[in-house]
Image (cartoon, rainbow, N blue to C red; front, side, top):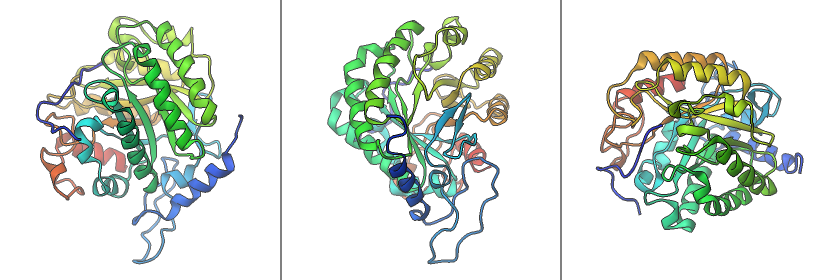
Length: 364
């Protein structure tokens, strides 16, 4: 949907329901690990008043409040079977912007922004995973653990982009997801996104890839939700002249999965909005990436069109993560350039226009 290669100004940074009891315990433990209260996932509950200084929080974090997620019908549901929508942010590529994912920045995301979820983006090429598989696996796990420690869910994003055929990295994906699923098989706070933005490849090829990767994850973690990328930069094929019907008519042969959709509001207009509306009437959808700018994540923000998307997603309880939680020079990065070299992460003074806008929407 949009091409993101090396940022020119970025520094280089070196069996059924098995395990559910363990996962429930881990979710409950997230109640007291943060220093400020956060609202539960958008399930209609009013936020609790702040706890007195020096006392443990009395309100649940998103993770503790909702526990193990699953797909029920067209919706993402919590451990009680209630439909929920996660709202949060995606990191930029961790090979470039690991310095933007710190204790301070994640405290701000969880407590100041009141985010439900962090998408941890591990690029495969572009100086990412293929250059140091063990190192980038460890980095992804560090950031997932940090999200969990703050009561947020984590989307483990296999950020394949170029080449656009996910099968080109099939063996790497199997290795990565085996390691991740082994580590998080007893944790309720992960969702596995197995193919960021396939492009130039048929839906049948993407489906074949998914049907090889999902069993790898399920062998270790049978309960977690898996997110499957769609054709043409996860546009349900629209960016290559197709539509959601190819997925509706030939879905992935697996349960407890959702399909991903990406949009950039200044570029992707009525046809894309209507596709998301139609697709979410037939398929479980998670918008794992979007921006208020053009398809390259840069240029002027179109907040009017963006709000139309957000209104649709709110009405249909579609979860989303915004691109991106960094200080990249482009307008789609929420922080002003240079913020990640400092220690101030809270409030709106450190944010670009798009950052102010999306922080406000996450806090709602």
